[in-house]
Length: 348
Image (cartoon, rainbow, N blue to C red; front, side):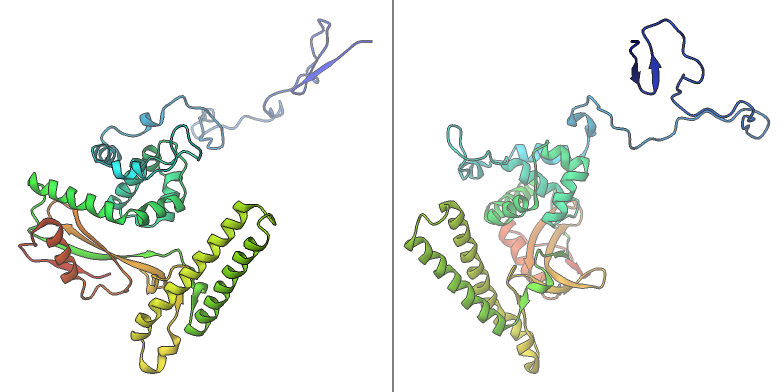
């Protein structure tokens, strides 16, 4: 019996017989022999082109470092962060060689990402997370270390004092080198979308009810563990208890901030004041596109000549009014000086 092999539509046999034209497959469809070939104006043949193919998967043998220009700002930011003393951040890491736990993200990477994002005008952890996936400069700083917005947001909120001190020392160093003179300082506010959803805002009666439910849930979980410790996995129950305690703390924080929001309402609208149970500090503000969403108002003070940020403040008010005196005091506290020229503040 004569055997046959088939591959890519071409039939071959062990014999030396040459396939007939009907058996010979082609890689591309050919036009009929009697069909005239298309010609371009002037009677010449149709141009042969190399067209863009953006779906082809290719492997490029290039390191990430070779894709970023040598004079890129991201390299300058990284070089600056490498020169900082971050020993306090490293000492706070619980995962060590020889012990248990997943390896922690290098604090230098997180600090460099936030510093470069600030330079580029990015203040949202979610936006920074997207840039780490889509933008080459942020990918270069991360160096293939996985990122998520929780890690980025927690780093910024957990080390406020350290980051504030770094800003102070950085500005002082620049002033010592006569790179910043604080002759003129401009202040502006930028509204940053909060992680709280619009549906998380509750009025006082609903917050009181939510607090009672959360406290009852915590007590029930505690009693369940005490009565039957082997009822379920200890780690799972610990996570449930922690989540319940955090919800109680958030609701208590919302109730604590509610008087501030009520004071801003008219006397006949006090009962309409609402606060978020997800992010109690967030306030519904009018954004740049005209819509209203939960957000924060980040105030930046910048030296006009050098474009160096010399002051940062996060407020919960949607208005920039009355913030200049607060910022001037912050600059004086950081540097020991106040702007000598005319200070300006622009509102969005």
